[in-house]
Length: 185
Figure 1 (cartoon, one colour):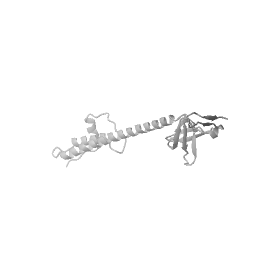
Figure 2 (cartoon, rainbow, N blue to C red; figure 1 turned 180 degrees about the vertical axis):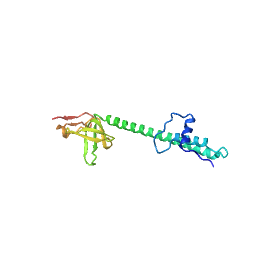
Figure 3 (cartoon, one colour; figure 1 turned 45 degrees about the vertical axis):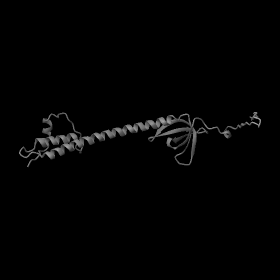
Figure 4 (tube, rainbow, N blue to C red; figure 1 turned 180 degrees about the horizontal axis):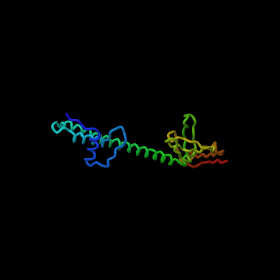
């Protein structure tokens, strides 16, 4: 019956195989380097009269390969997640910046209050872009980009707010002559 020596044997195997300078993190989980060191130590310390079965050796190598691939995939997924978060934030800021100077209408976070005015700035609050909107009364309010209901290049013309009214009528009579009138008080 073959047995594998204790930690001294494993440390000695790691040192004699030329893997000096390899550092392991102080973690409770074994990494791929630790797994490889254990495999090498097991192979060096096996009983020559009763060597390890080929199928067992192949199975352990497959486990090592799987461990390495899963570690690489986890690292790649973490990097991808960070990159996607960065691009999403940049896209949201650019979307808000494109609205500066535009007239927007939207609903406040309470779901009832309508906000409309000219976008003056974009702020980043709690991971979401917020537009600073100057209302017609001169106050600044924040509006979430996702709650915008309408965007226009300029403030809509509203004759009741300017205090002027114009009447322009155009007509043609049956003979085709223009009989337009314009009334401008």
